[in-house]
Amino acid sequence: MTIFIGCDHGGFEIKNKLIEYLQDKNIRVEDMGNYQLDPLDDNPDFAKKVAEAVLQNPEEFLGIVICRSGVGVSIAANRYKGIRAALGFEAGQVRHARENDHINVLALAADFTPYEEATKLIDTFLSAQPKKEQKYLRRIRKMDS
Image (tube, rainbow, N blue to C red):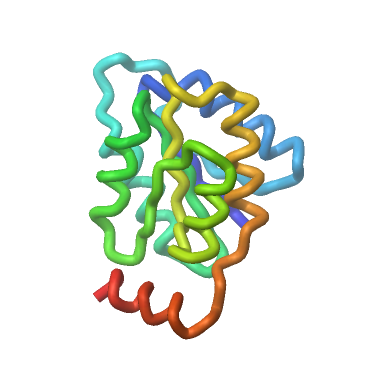
């Protein structure tokens, strides 16, 4: 499994901590930027990089995008066919979104998600598996059409 992670200035600090957290768990992480704190950067640029990377192999790759609210990166990532991004705010909600809605990109809100909670959301995102029952697959096909 490879995780692609990207953020704008609002998520820069927590992104770097989360990369270390994932690497300590022996998870392959690819940093898609921003690589320096730039208060004038734009979150769609980094959501695009993550979305395009995940789409290279959607069966093996997942993404994490971060901005202050989590909303901007979620909207931007969802512009790409095949990406199903959701803003995570509680572990049960993230599990449900991964299992039932087959999200492949987790959006985090840096201003509203403390580091410890972010690690729980990521652990849940990575451990939950999409359900394979026909009703879920049918819904995914409809979303992707």
